[in-house]
Amino acid sequence: MKSPTTQTGRTTPSLRLICTAVAVASALAACGGGGGGGGSSTPPPVSTTPPVVTPPVVTPPVVTPPVVTPPVATNPTGPANPSAPDPDIATLGDAFDTYWNYCATPRTGTDPYTGKAYPDKQGTLRDELTFLRAWSNQYYLWYNEIPTDFKMASFTNPVDYFDKLKTPLEISPGVPKDKFHFTYTSADWDKLSTSGIELGYGVTWTSSGATAPRTWQASIVEPGSPAAIAGLRRGDQLVVLDGVDFVNATDGAAVDKINAGLFPATAGESHSFTVKRGTATLPAVTLVAKDVTALSVKNTKIIDTPTGKVGYLSFENHNAVAERQLIDSFNTLKAGGATDLVLDMRYNGGGLLNIASELAYMIAGPASSGKVFERLQYNNKIEAKQAAETILFEPTAYGFTGVANAVAKGTTLPYLGLSRVTILTTPGTCSASESVINSLRGVNVEVNLIGGGTCGKPYGFTPVPNCGTTYFSIEFKGVNAKGVGDYDNGFTPTCAVNDDLTRELGDTSEALLSTALSFRANGVCPAQPRTSVQAMAARTQVRPKVSQIAIHTKAR
Image 1 (cartoon, rainbow, N blue to C red):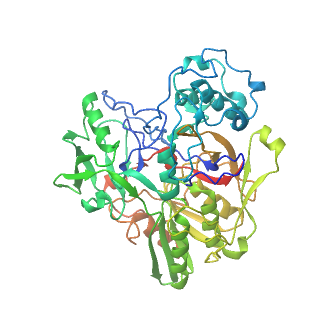
Image 2: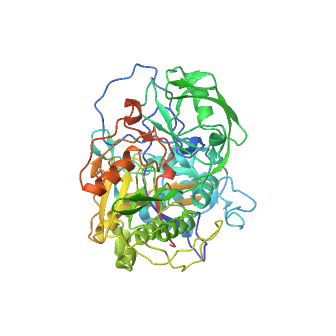
Image 3: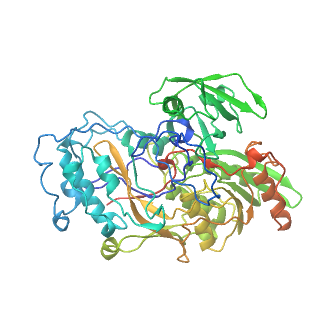
């Protein structure tokens, strides 16, 4: 992810994203890392009805994580009249020239991420709503499907209004055409996108279901985080939270207490967690919420096999700080003599497309240089005004600014120069991660997938900040050098293997990695290793939508 780009003239921080909103089908809010997050609604209560046994589905429903909405004035005084008729769409003009940064409640002071004064000017609620309508009319991929059966005067805040500015069509009964329309507080988005920082405990949970009895297990525990210091490990199952039976509780008061513990609103909050490890229930631990910086790249290693040295790394987020981490990782693999690669992106929800293209180049090497990584397709209005926008395989670093240990722009990237790669995937592999798969195949690199089918998110966004809220609305679809981009249902794995939470990532006995090494050796998908039924159950990541997107920087 990335914070807003430096603005020159009238430039929006138009970070292009491919939505990857895979979230647990849970009645609880879905926020990655156990932290607070963003979204356009509060979490619904846990169902009090008995669970219904339904056939398994390929794609889990999207759950919108909670959001702290910036305060807005209700019908404030100002140049606009909230009770006036809706504006004529045909005469709205350019959203950024006319309505941008006119706020009902302007922020004051300096933006800590740009070092500049907030751009907010005194306006009205009507101004904020008009900006959203004009912007959607210009850039939304399905702008001509936005309904007109509601009025601005009916809304008291911009987030609720924005929720209506999308197509109501369905691709099948109960499945909306647009599942990826959401908001985030601008401050939280900047922390996440620039530095990988999120308020929470440093643990990411997976879930196997929405209703009681619930099974949530830790899939990622960030090194040095409150969760790690307290001794939580991958595979631990949450059973009690602040004295509430997490597995079975269904009443509203209990659910409210659980949500408050899972998704703390402020740093310094402390909550009691009890987990089960295997068959043993461990003593309760107290976790104190803080801003946690997640490592994007972990577990870089060389695996010696009878047929050569295989590189391995787990990669979890295409954000700006990942540039340095990936370069260091590939330098290590190259120095260690790796002649093949297993890339673990089972939990990678996406991020910067610039990082995705760099990663793809570091895998394929000079044979891919200058070729199309991804071509972006917009609505007919945009396509009529501009040439096709293309992201290339680049041999040098983008050089993101404003991040710790930044890489200088133009730095030559290391590479392995492979004609094949094995990628570990689950339904949590989304967006920019899928772009890596699709784009490598577009330049004839053999890509074998081990694990589960990916989430299927080829659509893109421009995150647009206005008055303290950053809005995400689909703008484009990405295709590779061969024009292929129809993977709405995800990519099918070469060898289907369920995630193995009984072993750490990088352990050669872990189900996905051991299968990858076996398939590499003999080209046959082996029988799945024996693990507990619980560990092998289908899982979905509990994380915010904003952690599951792919971004392309572009000035308007």
